Amino acid sequence: MKPQLLNDGVLSAAMIAGLMDKGAIVGAAPERLQPASLDLTLGSRAWRIRASFLPSRARTVAERLTASLAMSDFSLDDGAVFERGCVYLVELNERLSLPDGLIGAANPKSSTGRIDVFVRLVTDYGAAFDEIPAGYEGPLYAEICPRTFSILARKGSSLNQLRLKAGDYRLDDRALAALHQASPLVDGEARIDEGLGLSVSLAGAGATIGWRARRHSGLIDVDRTGALDPQDFFEPIGPQKSGFIILDPDEFYILASKEALAIPPDYAAEMTPISPGLGEFRVHYAGFFDPGFGWAEGRYNGSRAVLEVRSHDAPFVLEDGQLVARLVYERMAARPERLYGADVRSNYQGQGLKLSKHFA
Image 1 (cartoon, rainbow, N blue to C red):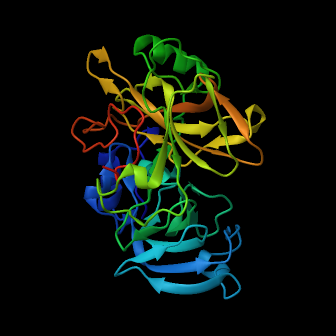
Image 2 (image 1 turned 135 degrees about the vertical axis):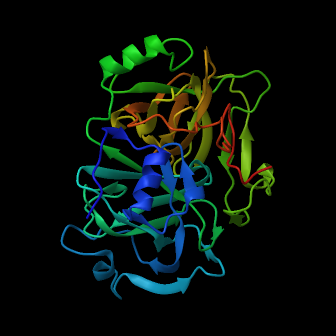
């Protein structure tokens, strides 16, 4: 019998742990719990595939993963290299049996997005990536496509994360404006329109304002922290007298938001891309912000959002202060016992412009 839900909102770590205890989440480790999400982990079985795919509502992943799509299979027990430009599918260690009314959403982890690895969750009978329908029962898979750097991963490595939600959880603009009045979400004016607007920072005196990825760099072991020299993988971008940079097509940039953000303890947030009509670029990959990010008891603190930016078909001018993304805020079903940056090891609390944890 599936467990029943009690509260609307995004599930906290304690609530996710309760689902683990009741068998609704199998194969997950308690140490992988974050304040409002669960880090998913790679299993043993992996496939090199010809192209990305969705099973559709009529088929399982196994039924879709035929010889016409799978080029080879391999084990991750002793680790394996995922080559840049190739597409892979990996069965995850976790399996779900969700209660009715509980949905799931997945996103790459922050450290995954910052090394330009495209990761999406796939489910049986899935008609969309990174979405888990209410009541889903079955395995989970990760589609992995390194875009700039080849990576080394193994069984137990974590590249993406799962958030579980129930009922009415998303704040509309009126509720978001009221929350900002009660507990400031950004320093300065909040641009609220279908979420909280984020702009890019390209200004600074004598400082690095961004990083552009170098191609043909070395291998990144996703489980090693502080091991790499940033200069071997990224080219620093200095302040621009013009006030803008030109994004080259299909190149990868790490930039920072002009706004310093705060996520109060009773809320979580997710970054969403702006309308394509505002520019031929995308701010993408890692999108989850946990309760407590940039927040401090009794005072405004604030942490910058790191923006993973890629231009598409044409060179594109990106100006200082230009709107590039939005944050949507969501209610927690319960306040987490541990907040981001307080009782949780948090690599990016208080961050400015910062590369992934893999770099010294």
